Image (cartoon, rainbow, N blue to C red):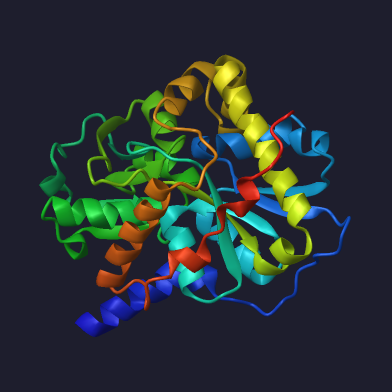
Length: 320
């Protein structure tokens, strides 16, 4: 039974990431198909699309927005996307399953961007109180990876909680209706629930992980259109500058996409660090979560990040 439970967990975690042999289109001049999330952590992606920064860089893209990292990873695997953004756990799972993609940048992160939320009148007051409770989380995400590590640190056997795989968009309503007792999610979901009277139990911080958000690209695109990939990242760099110089305007824009007021979006954004990079600290964070996922049996092998990461495309002109 124990072996069966572990097998089902692995299947659930990777189901959305099963590779499909559908070729992408790397032709010069063809729009780059970019998939990203509606999360606050995806601020640079949202701003770059909404403000037209890709077009300003002379690059045509076809953007699609999803509600989770696994959905973005599925688009990349199926061949319907060329570049995708997702959290650290989803990225590690993606590059651990083959040699089709490379991690080319991180566009942000935040130690406390994942939060645990309960109803205001809930008797849940400490981590151990989650035992036996219905706890919702989107499996296969960086939130899920962080939750596993958080439970391990707090001595919680996650198998003793009733873990429910749920899309973040449905979590606040499910909590209010009483169909779940708690949920764990990244922003803006916790803030949306707080606006409806929910209470934050805690964050997944304090584990030595900054939960970096990553940009992944197909290897063929990198080989055949390196200049366009640099233009792509240059547009994200423009978005980073915009977020830093115009935080209120950026918050209004991100709030509109995520369903938050501008004020709540700006508060939520303060839980994040929006920087385009692929530094040693970021790679170390990926290595740490990969080691934990391997230890937990969630991935078969630990990726060689010296090969699976490529920061060379971050060397672009910053004149714009």
